Image (cartoon, rainbow, N blue to C red; front, top):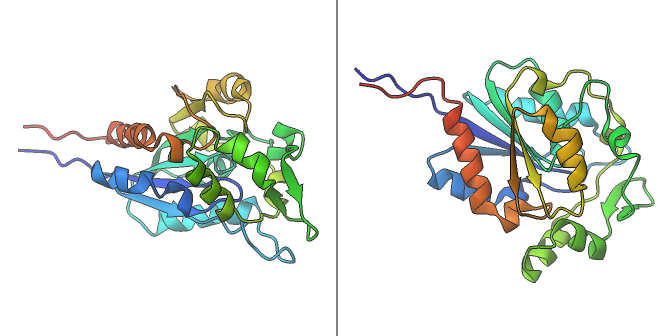
Amino acid sequence: MGVSRPVVTVVLVHGAWGGSWVWERVVPLLEARGVHALTVDLPSVDCDPAHPAGLAADAAAVERVLDGAAGPFVVCGHSYGGMVITRAAAGRSDVVHLVYVCAFMPAEGESLFMLTGGPAPWITVLEDGRTLPDPERSARVSYADCDPETRAAAVRRLRAQVDAPFGELVSVAAWREIPSTYVVCTEDESMPVEVQRDVFAPRAQQVVELVSSHAPFFSRPEELADLLAERAGATSREETVG
């Protein structure tokens, strides 16, 4: 008699200034591999600066997606999204693996600005206090290995973000209790590769390196989908037998 294998859902969390659209090449590849995928739009992006959403609100958005679907889950965060999943997955037994894609992987008591020292020089502070990457410089530092059309389209779709989440501390680090994989992007000009390798990767149980810029969901979608599908399969706690 066979034992059914639980279906693992992959939840994808974008980084700063992005949206669910960053995963548009990865989601169909996951579905083609038999893996159900959900995306989250973080409320701190494109929100009213008079009523800023912080890290807690972003984490709550992820929690709502988890609460509204059937687990178990693999939760993946890109860049700033790593801060979000570190907080959102804490204390959840239905999250069985975390994947950090060239992402911040904070310990307790750390904020994004504590880890970076403040905004990068290619980030512009707007008159209303929100932040947005400089179009020309962000095309180079984030999408260097993408084709020109992809770079231009991605830059056009970026949206202003309040900086409130970047100063909030993480009180509980989910990766202390949940197995994790860190994906180092070796051609990343946005987050220094040495920070990925030396600061964050040692915190994960598994480390994978992709020859990619800061946007592997555009430049290496097949490889990223393979990695996520593998993690989704590896986290299944029962195998079909007999």
